[in-house]
Image (tube, rainbow, N blue to C red; front, side):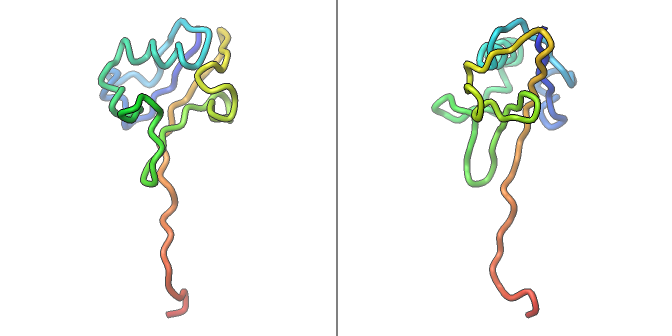
Length: 102
């Protein structure tokens, strides 16, 4: 059964669980099953249009192995019994101007 790894900041939405097993054939079905069991996660992962959050201040990535599912087949990315998805929240690196020697 595929597993979704939950990062510490989101575990308060899963009753403290670090992993959630889901019965699903695709990444999209897995995420839907996760949200069906833990609906308060929706606002943490998705924007108002129902897309994974991707803004200039943060992004939600769902990894299958070392690949973001957006680089694969998106929600249609196939899963098998041994698949492990990981939810990852990232923030862009801060960029500042100025002279390093100043």
